Image (cartoon, rainbow, N blue to C red; front, side, top):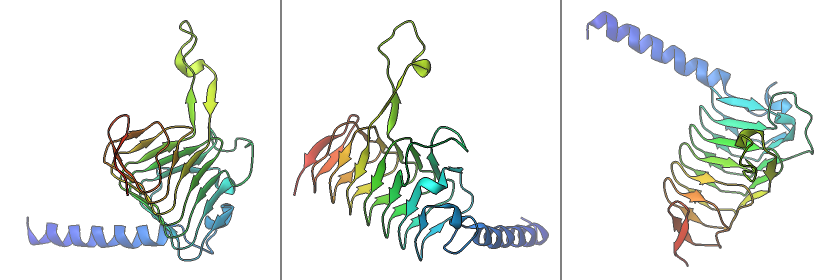
Length: 198
């Protein structure tokens, strides 16, 4: 690479980093004021992948939400929601880059929960009991999701509606959690199964 190209790359990267820091959402900012709560010392990095329904989202203190994360409450921006504080993320959490949390009913993430990149959590799915109707047009099933304090969800984990993950649980990469997991266990696979307990 020529010296001119190296200089341009350094300048462009530096400008992008400064812009990304300035565009991040933090306490006291205008965008943070849209949230039900946005805790002291928390940050949502730029750029978000999707962000709406903030007035029903609680972000605790000291929580870091990585870039390209989608936090959504409801199906579309501006939708009238069924409740307040529907998506609750605790204190000192880490939500890795590329994660998606799609809330329609009730999702609670406890304190000190860490997500690796590209974790997907939702509390809604579609029924498929009518074979002559496309699945996307069938009625939806909404069930609360709880992820207990101190848990770790590795890269690519999927958490389905109605699941309660206990406290201090480790879920291995690319696992699909379809049933409750007890406190302190390690679970892996699709569907996730407990492989060890403390």
